[in-house]
Length: 339
Ligand SMILES: [Zn+2]
Ligand SMILES: [Zn+2]
Image 1 (spheres, rainbow, N blue to C red):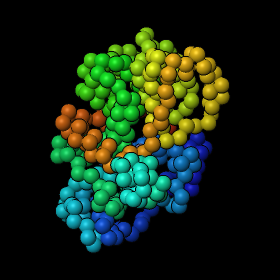
Image 2: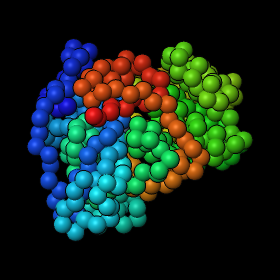
Image 3: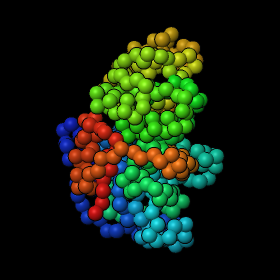
């Protein structure tokens, strides 16, 4: 499925077109992956609508890819043919700069993203440098593993960046694919932590309570207790302001969104220093993922038997999956399945 031009999804409901491309050849150090499943991510909407535009078009979107190795370029020997691998948002980085050397390759100036800067997984095949492919734990099915590669891995990084301790109160504003995985991770890693969920739809709130949140309200509600950390996964600004109001003194808001939409930017003018920032409240964003996030998280997922709630679509129904995501029709993670 090819993205040939950037569009406004409210006017053009079919941004992707089916197309036929030659099977790519793996270059030195690269592997060819036959794609089995690819998760659908909110970032794809940002790409399609131009908030994080692909540098070249047409492009194949998709950065939560699970497949099997079918060919190897020269010098590629980390995986055997037939082995199952995952590919995440991080496609490559320079390997040489300060950020790369300290393992923060997610911040490398030469960071390249799967399914934006290079063709990704909304396709039958893709190539990837073997150093940036990840072993997928046996216990996870293809469709279960796919959303872990973005929503899960970035959720893992977000949770780490909150610096939460067990027993501290956690808030999640927005409750899509990443939110529900973070709730499951938090319950396991911080058994004495209470999680409060802010979501705009009743379905999402009900889902959060089913998964063990102690409270669920609208993104504009005030939580019954001040929260030590909040992770924001919404695409807009109002929940940021509301979250700052919900933070306890010294609390930290971690924004896990690659871009924010401009529609409600005026909400930021409601920022009131004593209510929203005073008393050492902090705001931090999460950018991309490093390989260690993906790998540590996949191990954790296997260890704790993390199984994301998923909804499967055929590859040719990618446009419908994207539109449902845009409309906020979310119950778990959407995954495209290849024949
Ligand atoms: Zn993603
Ligand atoms: Zn670098």
